[in-house]
Each structure stands twice: as structure tokens, then as C-alpha cells.
Length: 98
Image (cartoon, rainbow, N blue to C red; front, side, top):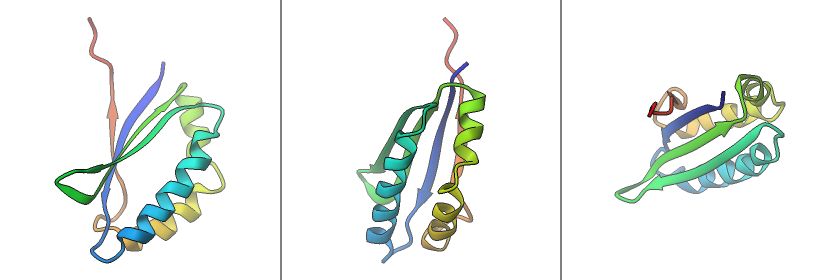
């Protein structure tokens, strides 16, 4: 079963350019992961410092491999002081059953 989630965070005022650079570099790495199917980064039109990242992984094992990737920790360590939240807010999604 696919693992689907939405990650959200808000760049601190003045940190927008650095956050944009970090997430662009990180996205390139995540998209190369064998089990990653989607890693789409969005900002909210009415609040461009608000980021929404839609992620889909092949299955739970692929998601765990993503969490254990060697570049994840350094990315989060660099991102955390640049965002308003304590960490990215994760919302796990389930498909609507027909």
C-alpha cells in the first residue's frame, strides 16, 4: 500500500530564499529515491512563505528508507531554525474508498 503524506511548514520572515534553496536541493535527492513516487513542493499563493509538500512512497518500507536517508538529518537540522514551527507538520493521507 502506498504511503502518502502532506508536510507543511512556514519559512520565517527573511529566511525565504534559504528555505527555497534548501528544499529545492532536498527535493532533487528525494526524487531519486527508488521508492519515491511523488515529491511535489508548493507554496501557498496567498502566503508564499507557507510550504506544502505532497509526498508519495511505494510502501511503508520505501517511506522508512526515506526517513533513514543520510541527507534527511542534515536537511532537517538546517531547516528547523529557518521555519516558524518546531518541525515540519506531517499529515498522513488515506485514499477515499469507493
